[in-house]
Image (cartoon, rainbow, N blue to C red; front, top):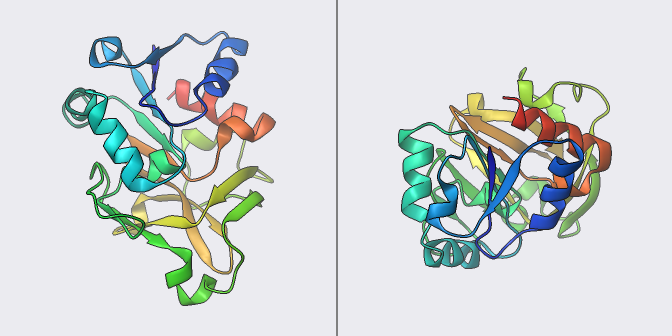
Length: 204
């Protein structure tokens, strides 16, 4: 069973629609009890890093999520700001992130190579897998996804970068460490490419 973590951010209905059309069971979890029995977790998010962390903490699900992800090794995928809060810190705010992956979130505007690019990075862009992953089955060539962000995740280890994208310079647009996955783009807004990725995650 896939649980979509509803802590007040993200286009929850779009994920539910994708999985319903694929006949894949999904539940929307708004509290810790509703996370019980989850075999996979989706952590969506839009907006500001600190606001996302505040809402997640306020939801009462933080401790249960830590246990499921860190102790029980339940696969989780963070999406957009949901990916960014997987990291330790962000230049967008002052609160600590979840720290599930050894990474920090950086601003494009503080990166010399991308400083002159329009912000936010918005619209369709190519994804280039850095390594083979079942998350990208059927997406190895010509896959394009929808982006809307001004910050990117900078991993400590290059081995944790699953895919990259170019916006003035190359940045990580998908990450993975053990059972923790993250994508900067919006699969729920990326038509057939996004549908395939979400189905791949369900089948991990």
